[in-house]
Length: 291
Image (cartoon, rainbow, N blue to C red; front, side, top):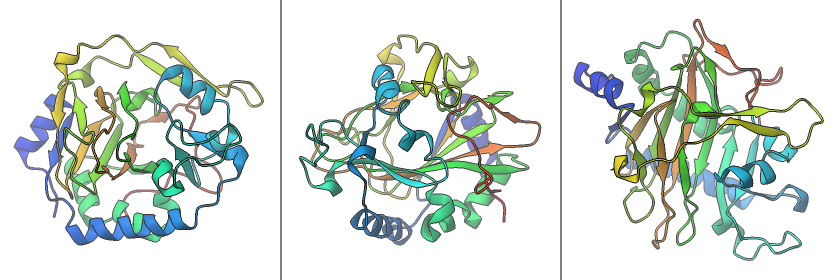
């Protein structure tokens, strides 16, 4: 099973992230890649729903915070695209399968392949070794990081978007389905940055308001020398504390950097902020991780 050793647990607690090489086999990675290929082949996104994904604050609020396609995606499988892949009428300028930034946010709930991985005995054992008592899955994403123009992800903390009281109850699980290298946009972290609280929050506006979200606080300037690159081979799992600062650079290489990622929350003694953009629904409450 995939239990953490005492030294691994200590390193995660100190750094706020941890790489576990060889968590999934090549066959398990291939099964997810094949399934996502089928999902993309069947993709049908209406013109008015074609949303470009960005982590730049102004672009986030304009392109995502003002569209119901994004704000109502928490319990659905929806498609988000790289910048510059549409003409003014919303038609694709590049092949659709090369234009996708990510698919989210409920693959874990609606697709059996991704549900099986998310709730696998290995993942459950990992969560138990972290001391999680009543974890639930709050969202999931498939990230493509397309060759040549896969967009950068600017420095951020996941808890800015998935806020809880108290803090420290959200954990990211990031699985490399292809080798993540310096050239194709691996993750970078500031070790130990998970101990200083959250610098900004995305909050959802009251129903009917425009834009649909806004930010409280701001992301401070970060010293680039503090970031540590974290390459990961295919099948590796990266644990990400909800408050650790991390980023990834644009992919200028000729190889994609596909990954499956999901977030879990410890519910015991935790309040999920009603101001988060993502909210459980009657049709899809956050499913328990343990089965």
